[in-house]
Image (cartoon, rainbow, N blue to C red):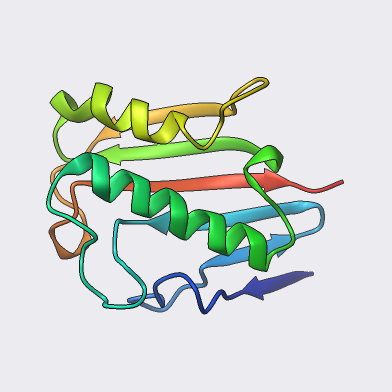
Length: 127
């Protein structure tokens, strides 16, 4: 059995999907881009600002699902430009200041929704 999770403090889905799905002890969060939920526009044009906003959006979805970044076990980062790897890595790392960071994959993509420069998805586990 699964349950759809929706946070009003993260951007509404722009397609037929849930912000997250709880399946047992796991929370599968859909990818978030750097959209500001209050305005529906990007928080900034630069990749660092977009990455930080994507992480804020994920924090909101995690909270709606009763979890936090401490519960994250796996992330995937999608980059339009691999030259942004270091910059995004620094912004992303701010969410995981102590302990072992989650497993992660980073992949280059041709394009992202709405012209985003970065998208981040994750899986969390709540025991």
